[in-house]
Amino acid sequence: MKTVILEKPGSLNLTESAPPAKPGPGEALVRVRRVGICGTDLHAFRGRQPYFSYPRILGHELGVEILSLDPDTESSLQPGDHCAVEPYLNCGACSACRRGRINCCAHLQVLGVHMDGGMRERITVPIEKLHRSETLPLEHLALVETLCIGAHAVDRANLEPAQSTLVIGSGPIGLTAVAFARLAGAEVAVMEIDENRMRFVQENLGVEHLIDGHGDAEAQLRAVFGGDLPLTVFDATGNARSMMNALGLIEQGGSVVFISLVQDDITFPDPEFHRRETTLLSSRNATSADFASVVQTLETGAINLAPWLTHSAPPETLIDEFPNWLQPDNQVVKAMLHF
Image 1 (cartoon, rainbow, N blue to C red):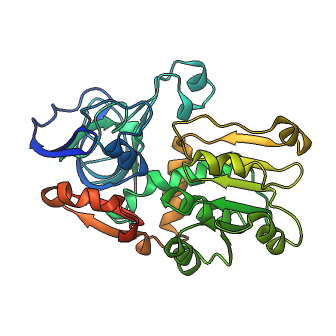
Image 2 (cartoon, rainbow, N blue to C red):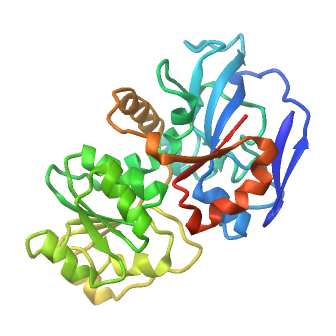
């Protein structure tokens, strides 16, 4: 079967590999139909992804079709169903798992990151990690995992209606935070340094408050929020400097949520941190409940994903196309591999 392998940084290869065996206990054999290209994949291609080793089959944003199921496992799923894949394989036994925090399992294995993922025609996955939709197209199912990242971060922040909120960075993860913060009823501003991305969030997500990251962010935010700073700031840049600066952009008693992951140290002045009585949160991955909720939200049509899907390629041309998707001039919002 066709398989794409990242042999080492900067080197993707299309090859043939043996198909997986029949599904074992609790497993399903699925045909991979769509693979979203994530920032994790781009960082791995550049050689900058933490907790990563080579060679690796990438791919954790998956829209799949069930081919067969373990006959001894009870499930409402059946062959032919289209599903999103929850790619976080947790141990079920550690303290975090026992407390329901499966997204930060002490032994977590993420498809396409810690173990081989979905850039291949077929793969076996645990049945419990499949989230069916009878209406969503495969492209949207492949975006469910991305959307769950933003949904989980917004849930962590406990936003209230009309709460002043800033999202820094409008790449795909930033867009998901914007979308779910708006669905939570927050008053959202977006800070960005790329004009094309600023235009995208304005035209496609209805964001009115745009903050130029090259300018005086504090002054712009006070102008937007009636003289105050936002109560909640999400940083989705993956940039250490931006993350550190975010701690100075919140109102007294406010919160900062780090969504993105950066392979660097984050430091900040402790007196300022205490003066604000800052709440600092990280947000890692998502839970099964997030997946179910996001699928349901998408089925209502609450988020228009069509404009997000800007680039795609089959495996035969992916090798040449992939490096282009790293270039800002190509204005990639979301790229996708289709088998």
